[in-house]
Image (cartoon, rainbow, N blue to C red; front, top):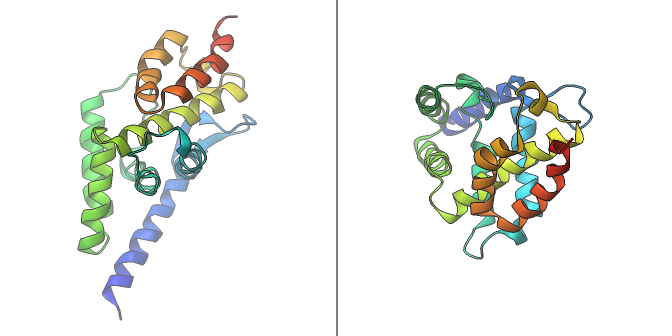
Amino acid sequence: MDTRLTDQFAFLQEIDRLKRILRATPISDNSRPENSAEHSWHIAMYALVLSDQADPEVDISRVLRMLLLHDIVEIDAGDMPIHAAHDADAQAAKERVAADRLFGLLPADQARAFRALWDEFEAAETPDAVFAKAIDRVQPLLLNLVSGGGSWAEYDVTLEQIDTRVGEKVKRGAPAVWNHVRAIIAPHFSG
């Protein structure tokens, strides 16, 4: 039996659990919370469609890989809504342990490559990671808007909090996207 394939299939089976991790953001019809697997797929589509908004040095294929991998750690560490009160350092530590376990299921070469992409995304220092972080922040805004406020109401979120917690990251990686999205969401908070 091929141990490489055995390890790869073990990882693929394990990441199916991402479908069970519920996020604070609802799906667009507000009928239920989005799960983390849906989020990962949807933001990969956002990056693909909005790739023309990235700086020229951004490699969209790397961004797509980052976005597909970035939330896998939530299988063990859980999702931490951006507007929820939490200990960011403790959550980051839980996510690093989760990354070790989950990526460690893969053959060593893939484990190193996937973990390196995950670490790069988390650090948000390279052009690819900065754009990926921006896109990761945009999609929940639009889902909250079309669902009538979604998790914004639950966490009593203000436009100023969105500007600080979300806008700065989006503006850094996709300034035109931020300007457009902010103009769309601002009326929701003016009532």
